[in-house]
Image (tube, rainbow, N blue to C red):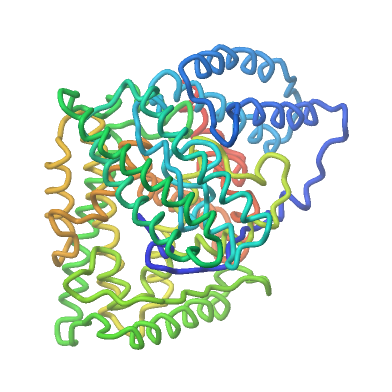
Length: 542
């Protein structure tokens, strides 16, 4: 899902330092745990490619050298003595091990530098609402959201240097991309077309104030346009299948994302949640049948007012209902700077323009980023590699939509509850498409048709750009689409267990404060750390 940033939302970024991370003492230097921290720093340095003149090296020779080095890090991690460690420290060891497994999987299976043109992104305008960009991408992308206008001298240098490197980056990409498929060529072409528009807009903006940067942006645009033409030519004769297969998918879930659900179990869960959401929607529609239907905002001013009112309502509800502790620094701002006509609305905009509150619950992402800016844990204080945070980040945000509905946030207008079920149906339907694509059971056209058909109210057209972009993500990052739903199920299990253990002493605020304090790590590890039960991890070790 492309979230608030995709419609011009600018929200103060940031994220929490976990209470556990700040309160639990780190072992002293010279201890085995300190060895893990030192190892982690060395490991992260190893994952960064060589860079020459702002051009990262993803050549075959460079990647072969990196692959050969992984075994050394495996041995070094295995040699760290974890005897007597606390659960929290053992969890940190598992995090590092999963990252190593992730890079190994990249080399064995995904090889984005060889297969995926989306990997060679050269400019990003919008900040992601999760710990890192959802798509795999090369090191050193020009993130324009990190730079304020007018550009400072330091920003001018960075932007200019990265723009000037674009032609060389894409020239290298043409050499590296020897494993293309038809779908990934098409995904890459669309992505480069979008980058071309962004570079043109940047050049126009800086034409008078920074003509040297504007010229570099135009040269970068020309390189991007030529790369798109190259992909169009390369597409001919390439294979259609772009998935990784069921066996590789299961390995990725088990070894890297630490997810206790196989491909088939995820199919079963997505089908169950799709049916549940559609049945619940039917019941809610019957309950609301005498109420007027909600219609989209008709002007920029109306949309701005709608968003302002609902963001305030969301934050007030969290505080008044004691959902979790809200620090003074935490806030949610959703400026709306442009207006989309009703006939141009795509899925999430259909909901935002009618009733923003159900989807604003998903924007707990941004509150988490405000917490994580304050997270100085030596391992959990940085975005984990291979997106192994997805079950935790997307699972929470998706679950929060339904949890807050049950908590009463939508009681003022029952019609709004319909959108919570529509959101879940969309996520389950598109996730099924991603699973079937990786298994080679569906084509992209079939996945698009299914996603559109099972999204209620026609909110996702058969040619929905949003749905198409989601499938580009899910083919690039296996399991990301299902993480919204299986991560939701993992959080359900954790809440249920805590409620059963504590009975009427259960406090939602205490639960979430503890939950947030663990950082944005795989849901199975949070379950282990909060409950002391290893059953999910034991499944993964078999």
